[in-house]
Image (cartoon, rainbow, N blue to C red; front, side, top):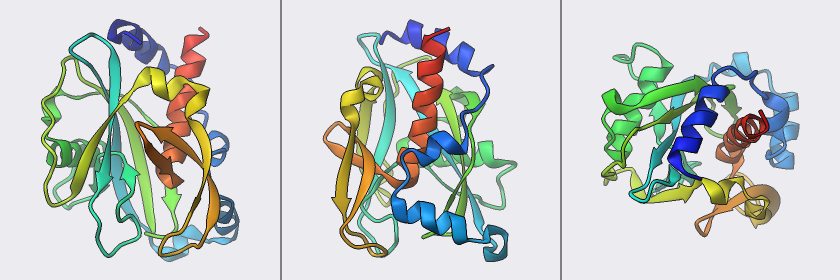
Length: 215
């Protein structure tokens, strides 16, 4: 999709009602659904985080968004694909500031260059005990990404045309530090399996884009 066409969609997305939890849960692992039903989230005193789904034009004028592969470390999100983003710091004025600051730190895009299209539905992540607020944003130029060496293993530019194709929707058997050999719904993007909370957030992004295409 050409970036001019994406910008037309973005202008419509800002006025659409959010698809919300129902659409997110279409990409939720079965165990996550059970866990969310049983949890009293407020009693767990979750931390807050902000992430950014950042769209931008390629040199050829097409549209991509950026995902990152996280480093391998001792933690529940080790070596997983996600959005640029992270936890709230005391200096952050709000969750949008968190998402912008973390995006600059992790992929090198200056905060001042990102236009936020809209805030999405927040999502609770039980394994890490975070409420995560996601945002759709875009740039008006092709960025020169710089991966944060301490946090990011690699950058994953995803063509919007690939993401909007039904061919990217799949299922995958996975084992992690908190689950064993479980089949999960996922997106296959640029050869990477994207699942869990990131897939759930992407499901809402995809729904908004598809709805705006019909308007």
